[in-house]
Image (tube, rainbow, N blue to C red):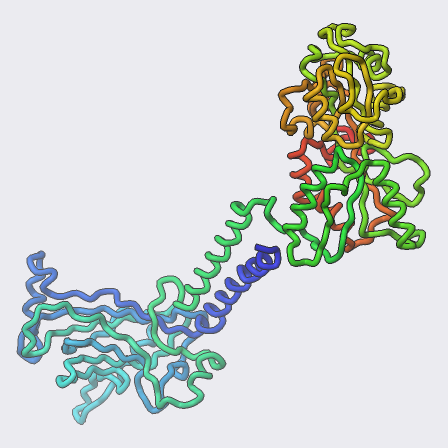
Length: 547
């Protein structure tokens, strides 16, 4: 699911309720003639109740009604505007506007009741005077009842009543079963319709542009089209909630996927976290045309990474004041001087650890003891309280950020002496010796397998090593090699991880997009998972120390 789909869901979730409102209150809701069947009762249903026997004795023209029933119909202006006779969708020559059909029943009597306006009865009745000046009240042509014996139906026609907003009237209809019908089946519900006129071609247009009442309809809350819109709204809100609450943030697309190629360089210690973030970024941006090569030789070390970035900028002939948006180098600490075009950005805190083969018999050393070991002044572990096992010092090459951090933060600037052998595998297990290698995996492998070996690594990498149970992560002056140790006890062996670009990465470039992802979006979670504190969360961003 991409962000564009979510945006459309949000747009439709707003559009549908607006459409429902306009439909309900501006189109069909402006002129709406509603009805409700408030009672449809057989006289037999109340037999045996006090005073109910009179219902069964009802007569019409001296004849007792057969299986009498009663229907109370309420007609109301359910819209927001006044309804006038011209609003009824009927032929102008028709005197009535509403027809109520009762199937399998014959209409015996009709009574107008409970008009909300005193003028309403005038649409139903008129006064007539006979030759003897006797005034009688008779029904108008628009208010009458008919019975069709052939179709076994009774019909009540109601006039085109002018109804102010909110006004209403009720009609009580007395019915009976048709002669010869001996069944006991329940009667069908009344059918209430508006007259259809003569089927003029412009009637359908009148429904919308003249906003006439198209038919009578029962509205407890909203019309059927409005209900559909409301349910679509509910579905849209529910779907959006699923994406927000269930669809995990680490699977959501980044805000800015761009097209192009991004080359990454630098720190082997910070490399695993950056690699994981880059792989996630590529998954999220699938189809955007973005490429990030992630071969085994991508993270070649901080010093080599800085050189590669410098060379890339020179090859691209980037003008002063502009930036290269296709390369990023990550370094353990600030790069050395002599790179005036490179711009650093602090990203995270990396915690490093000194690892010792379990045979050495040590778990906690002071900084002074560690300096003596790396200076070659301690050649056997029994000199610092450990076992009688020779020290085998396995260093990174001088271009390593992990090594330069050790020298700066723990060894007080004192570089370890030169190696005694060039191949760490050739160290004599029974004699003190030193070697160097540029591969951090080799250092951990040798430390785990060689008696008395000591080396150093990024803490998360050491924790994840397949033979981590065969070496010990040293405490330094009793301080744990963790982010909490840095925060709470000033554990010394840590460094700020910087991202370098050649000039400022242009907005919209792959470099700018990835750095934004790494520091402001889901890449932050990946850095946390690899044990890194974030500089954006640091109390003092200049020092980039954890809060």
